[in-house]
Length: 266
Ligand SMILES: C[S@@+](CC[C@H](N)C(=O)[O-])C[C@H]1O[C@@H](n2cnc3c(N)ncnc32)[C@H](O)[C@@H]1O
Image (cartoon, rainbow, N blue to C red; front, top):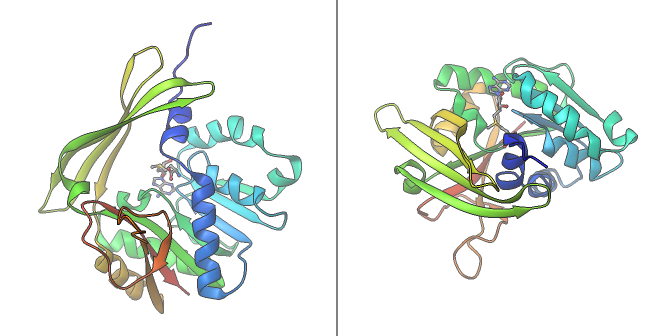
């Protein structure tokens, strides 16, 4: 049988860990509000894996996925929905919408994964997004932004990792940090894949980002009206390498590259 390369399937199976995001979001909400969260809005949802995982994780949970691009939404409708039951699908809503548009429907958690909000280049754009998110949160909602940084995130270079996945076979994922401009803090990044036949697929996904800093985000959240912000930093664990647990912290270690969550609390 001939092999047809599928960039979304390769992305989902190398970049994404939706069950981890669900666990992180639910723990954060529990830590901040001392109760279980039931409603999630997934911003920049693409093929909406996190939303799907969220509704599967509890029979009372609902999710709203927002993305501007019809292509990943359509891909998700074909593939992500096929792994869900009728009742799970009923608790999931997908909208082709700009995340900067306030939503009537309120969510307890609004989450944006994989630094997608780095697409906003100016304080004005980011403030518009944060203001709309604050308006779209329920009374005690939280707004969770996953971000990355450190010298290792701005130096030019490539990382690669090989995966073996059912249906896709053995493939290699490449994370390419193409350039960084320190004057505007703009970075160009790309994802390439080498598929199981050895064929290279360059620039499957490209990113033109502003690499924001944590203090900038906190300041803009404050300007947008969030009464409190918190940082969840990765617990270094016994070997200092990070154990995948994110804890509320006001002190971060100066890691070569890091991922952290900036949380705006309504
Ligand atoms: C990097 S992908 C994220 C995929 C996946 N959610 C993840 O976390 O890995 C970024 C997505 O953001 C969407 N996007 C960009 N600007 C947007 C906006 N203003 N409103 C909604 N979606 C947007 C793009 O269409 C794209 O699907």
